[in-house]
Picture (cartoon, rainbow, N blue to C red):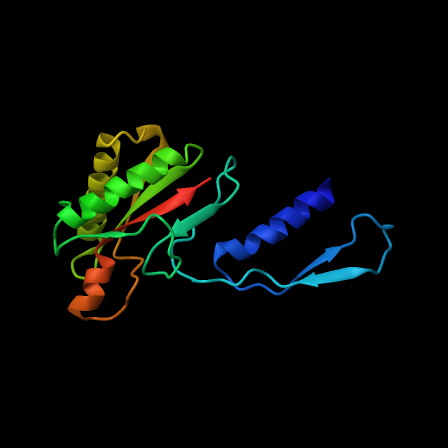
Length: 182
């Protein structure tokens, strides 16, 4: 039992966004002093982005979906105008698709993460990030997603997708990101 749990923990580590050496699994069916070993490379890490969160006691793992990260999952980021937390028509359309997907996957919880560009103070951007996450949360709830399956967090300007100092980079960072928690 302990070997199975340890193997499960080792196999889940690559999902944390860090590169790991190959996992070496022992032959569980053989004798305890067996020298038979199989080397299995870890799954390829698509992105070492900042959206790594600790797994809580009841969760099996986390998947994050974002068009910018290249993961191409169903919950794309939504974007905001400069210094705004109001939803654009495009964001509402995206959130309507998200609500349908979330309702079809009843066993999942969603963390709505608010992000900002790097202009402004840390305190201001944390508040604006919270307003952005809350705007997405409220809209999803108004579409019938149970509030118990949603939570919000603000990262302000602390986790940019693009560290550039251009309007294009800033526009990528003004977003709400959706982390899918199992």
